Length: 331
Ligand SMILES: [Zn+2]
Ligand SMILES: [Zn+2]
Image 1 (cartoon, rainbow, N blue to C red):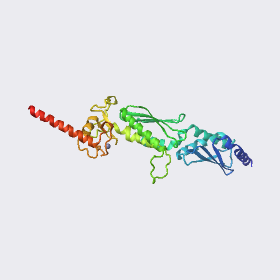
Image 2 (image 1 turned 120 degrees about the horizontal axis):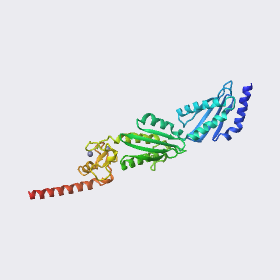
Image 3 (image 1 turned 90 degrees about the horizontal axis):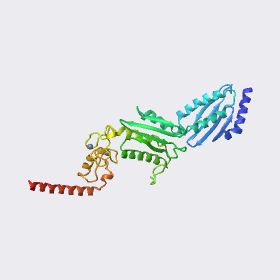
Image 4 (image 1 turned 180 degrees about the vertical axis):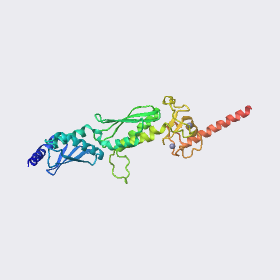
């Protein structure tokens, strides 16, 4: 009977104090069979703790089960385990409130818990030798370094408290790609982050209502697969020779130089000279298509309409003919 009265007293204490001393808590059930408390920091950082008490409680630790819709299952499993260890510190004492405070503190001090599933994807499926990921729980940041041969890009992602309702912060901390490549990469990443939280301006009436969604996984997939691990070995789509120099120090910076690397809209790359020749050679009908994927090439350096390209080409041909005639004449 002594144990029961201890528990009864603890439950009574819980009813009067719990919601006051554990921030964001809501007591759902409070009976000797089970105590259920919901803890909410944001709608994406909320969980329900279920406590059960053995016959010799509080001489034994309470039994904890954590449930959450938004939080990752593996995270909850890990948290259950450390909660169990924590409970053993309170043997023969009231355990519920200290445990609830412990859980609340964990959520507060580990803001990256909202993206544990996305982080696991990066670690298990994307990270290769030479790549690194560092989690900075204090500043809620993820430092990611991705390498592709001699090339690398270092990213810093900031996960806001209300992620994924709020937009993921995306910054490039360092890189050794051509500047335009980096601008394209980061621009695309920022765009993925933005589209994940902002509804499209032009709504598709058939589309389901817009809901903000996480963007870290999509951004990491793009960075690893479509950027860093791709370009160092990608050939020029026209001449098929290696495009980016094996040593990043040899990157050609002069934008009109023959070996300057151009990245076109579809993502394929060309030597400046190869692309220039191709863009100025017919056929022009329907615009010039990428030699790798047949997508229309859009590039600011060759932003003329097919008609203008055709006219220019004809003009150049005429000039060349004139020149030939002059040369013939001189023979
Ligand atoms: Zn080429
Ligand atoms: Zn292409």
